[in-house]
Length: 310
Image (tube, rainbow, N blue to C red; front, side):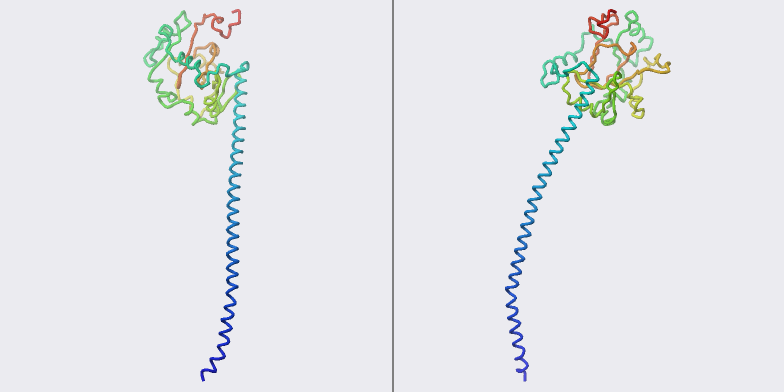
């Protein structure tokens, strides 16, 4: 009685097996299509990767080219502005590098620098005094009223001066230190024309210029222009010079300057403003002063009145 119930099932099983065997080529075909699609995707990804590398290289090259062009334009603008400032400072100067003093291994500048740094003979050296010990009376007698009232230059030293915040011993007014504080501040090059330059640009000029005699910052408005900078509070007028007749004048002319200058810079023979006497404090570097007695014939030294009959 079991057999009749089994026989009807066998054809269905046979047909199912045959149908499954028919599916094998279809799965293989689908697998083949999948592998081909995967290969195509991998190939496309590889092409995209190659394309991206090429694009990145092109963008990098373009970025470098644009950066170089921007740097070149910035450089041209910078030196164009410096040339304009130099023309304002010295209109008659055409060739600023005629002697080649800034060139590497310049024997002329090496010899000149050694001469400038060499101590002069004792007979030509300015007398010295300790500013913390000398009295006003003695200072006037020795230096202000000497040489028939013409006065005599002197070199003042002392702990009170070395203690000023602007001095090197206190980490004061070096160009790099000032740039950290006032990089974007404008400083005047001269009272004659009033042209200004940012301290950051002036620092770059000091490092890169090839001028025989570079321009310098000579600013009489550094304290008034930016009272909050504190520069005027980083030094103190010595007691010896506190008696100043301009203190009683209602409209005081320029009377204090900050001077920043690179190597090889300097000034020609000149008289101080309004023929006044001045005191100067050297905060960094070297500076050589040469003084001539008031009765020196200007024609002998090429002074400002050399062509005047007087």
